[in-house]
Length: 387
Image 1: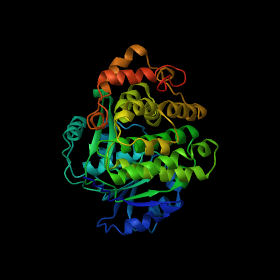
Image 2: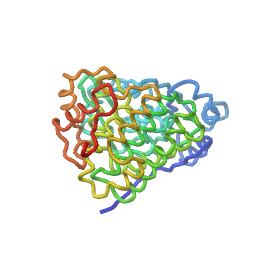
Image 3: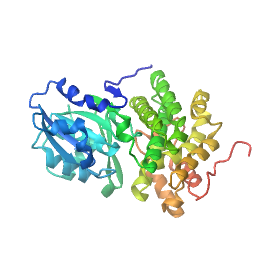
Image 4: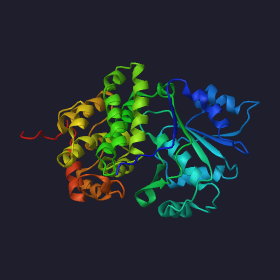
């Protein structure tokens, strides 16, 4: 059965962030308490946000700076404790995926008495949120996560060597404002890794067990849009940022219905243990996972055409090129991993809801084989069929 659902009001295009006040006015807020969650003070100078904070604003806006990447359970609890008495009706989250994930997570926590970090951890594990007490608006400043169009958030738990997911079907954003002008100042490393994260979202959505005809169409368009503009992004052409913002949003709309698969499942411990940026970690896994999945896909041809590659080996070479040209390592060895640690990483690479969503079976032995392929500090080791 093909079923697609996504209720997020999406606005995409240069300058669309200026519509924020209008969108808030249309939400019929009672107390008009708005938490403005941003990654840094410079964002507060943007006219769309400074108007909300200025005299004469119709809203009671509390700004909060959240600088952490890959937010932990402890950091989420600190943000909750700092803002719970303010009791916002709306959280406006402005930043990369980490900020958006914290913003949407907070909506599930308000209105609850959570005495400590352990209680928060239990709540996340049990997924006993109930209806969110606040709504949220996502405004990404990076083009890659698609978090503004999904109803789940990644929260890290290094103390328990685990990645947590705050999931609630009633916690889709009220609106997403995808303004490429906000992402134009990204450093090249971040721009490239974010773009490749979007490609991974779209590719995994295309082959996920939960895919449908709408999600596949969105995924293919996202892949074509991002991969077709990677050279322009590396060359510093301004038009590339619009393509990346659009492609990331489309990828988010695709995997909002399917979730991700093996690449994300395997990547989580690599980010947690070696500090590999999420977009880098998932992208270097795309080639070996494509090689694993291609034989079981009903129709891989549209995917290969969208990627613009003949096979997994060519895709791996292109991704390696994009990463190295942007100044980023493209192997586990270069990121400091030790070969003897790979079996443990393989055991940790089985993530419920991701590994079992992959079209080809995934077990620690298969993951270890994949990790061995991306370990050497050389170009991609995947061989073409018949080589």
